[in-house]
Structures are given as C-alpha cells and as structure tokens.
Amino acid sequence: MSIVLSLLVLSCCNLIGYPAFVAKPVIDLLGQSKEAFKENVYQTLPYSWDKSVAVCPRIYQLMLHEVVDVVEEYDQEIKLTVPGVYYLKQGCLCNEYWTLKENVIPLSTDSEHVIPQENNECVKTLIHNFHDAECAIELSSGTRFVVAAQVDDCYEVNFYNHHSQSCQTMMLNKNLFFEPSENCIADFIRILRTYCEDSQGFVPYLWGGASNAYRLQQAFALVENDEGGYWKYDHEDRETKSGFDCSALILRAARIAGLPFKYRNTATMAWGMEQLQATDAVEQGDTLYFKGHVCVVSDVENNLCIESRGYGQGYGRVHEIQIQDLFHGINNFDELKNAYLRGDSIKLYDIKKNYKDIADFRILKLRSIFNADAERLGSA
Image (cartoon, rainbow, N blue to C red; front, top):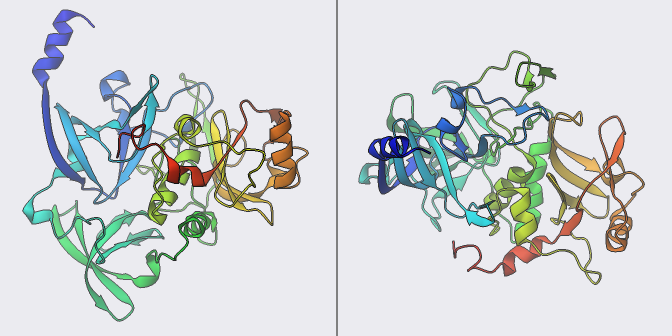
C-alpha cells in the first residue's frame, strides 16, 4: 500500500471500541473490508460460487440480538469482534470480521430489555425458523429473545424491529423454542436433525452461512459468467441469504445446545479438536474431517451422518446420510475407524455415486472441546 493511500485510509478510519447488537434478522460478515472485493459485495453474495472461486468473502453470519464489540469504523463499514467464534488467519486465531455499519446498533440502557444476557432464565432460543408476515421479518433458528410474559402456549418476547427502528413485542408459540435436556450432546444432534427435516422445504447450503431463516423447495442451477459462475435458486432473490456451510452448521447447533464450541471453519476444527485414538470409540457428535469439509456422526448404531454439502457434488443442502452413501466401500463406523487407523485411502461419493480420494481424513472427538486449552483459545 502506498504512503498516500495509507494516510487516506487512516484519515477515514476511526479506531474505537463499543459494544453493539445485531439489528437485523441475519447479517453477513466478511473476512476483509469490502474494499478488497468488487463493488456492492454485500448485496451480491450468492449461495455459492463454483470451484473457480477459492475463497468466499462471506465467512460468517450473525443473528438478531447477538452482541459484538465494534473496534473500527470506516465509512459505511465496521470491523467487529465476535466473542467465542474463532478462525485461523495466517496461523493465528482471529475473531475479527467486517460488516455494514447499518447492521448493528450501539448498546444502551434503552436496549437492555431486548438483549439476552447469559444465565438469564427469561431468555429463550428459537430451534425453528419463523416468518412473521405482519412485521415482514424472517427469523433464524438460534435467535435469542428476552421473554416478557407467558400467555397460554405462547411467549411474549421483546425484539428489535429494524423496519420501524424500535423495540417491540411479539407472540411466539412455545414449540418454536429450544428446551434443553440434561444431555447437551444429544441436544446438539436433536438440533441438527431439525435442519434435516424437509416437510416444509430444505435448508440450503450457503458458503459462509450460519443461519436458518427460511427453507426452499426449488431446484438450484449454475449460472455462468465471466468470473466462472455461481449457484442460485429459481425465483429466489433475497439480498441477505440464509443457510449453512458445513462447519458453521456444527458451530451454530453446538452453541444453541450450550456446548463450548468455538471453531468457525474446518481448518480451525482440525487445529483445535483431538483426533480419535485406537482406544477410542466413534461416538455421537464426533466430526469426520477432511480437507475442505466436515460432517457429524449423528447415529452410530444406524451409521448416519449429518452434513451441509455443496452444489458441485449435487446436494446443496443440509441432510442426514447413510455412511455407505458417503464413503465408497465403508458400511459402518467400525470399518471407517479401522480404515482411518490403517491409513487407508478414503473415497468420497457425490450424489451420482462417483467417488474420489480425499486428503487428510481425520475423526475428531467432540468431547475434546471440553478439554480445550483456554489459553490457546484466548480464554474466550
């Protein structure tokens, strides 16, 4: 960067620090300022690019009422930190992201009754997405609310309405909310399974996505352009899209379940989670990792996994899949464990049962997150 440009950036950039909350149902976070990308990047992010694009500008999403720390302002953008959500950047842990300034509002005494606080019994979390036609908002599962009152089978909840720019209340049925059990790992799988239900449509794959504000039923297609192409759905033109990529699916469900899971992407999971050893069993909640993808062991006895799989392999959605339909020549988790320990080549199927060798296959133990070195994770 030239000295003149550096001075210009510094003159337009304010280094600050203040807590804020997300003011819209779902917002996109970038790994770099929009200046690193083409014009209007926030308004033109697709569900996914084809394989010609190696890095997605969108690296995470936040939901209504989530609290962040704003550390820098630059024109229409802000840099912020997200507590407890880390990714590896040049070999170091990072929790810095960029988004549009309009997406957040500074915390104040006026917003205290809207923003959920930890360990507050009056806070409830959506386990299902919800569309409020009257307020014209689509709320994602994982959105947290302060309950103002209980009325029969409904909660009256406080929420921020970005259309009216005011704090309001709405009535939501209690069956939309997550009720924890005494087993947070079982809860984790239960939450993941809600994303696999397809009676009302499917949850789409979204590169960098970490939300479930709506479901789709239509087919996807590759749109080719000068940049190589991108994936889209017919008649679906929401500016801010919703869905999950493979790693954010795990992160979001784990955090709803109350698990101390802090890894944003596949590389960070491989860095932070312990690998299965010969004396270990494959257990529910363990992660199957290979370069560029992860999926979760959802049912050991019935040989099932849950994943959010990309478009190039023919899926483009969150689903639960038999392990024999995932890996060539593998019929159960015992066979997978033995092949892994022997160092055998593991072959991945696509939807048409074509298969290819995958690199750096690992089985990562979910229980290892309870032993994570707090210092390595920034004590967050």
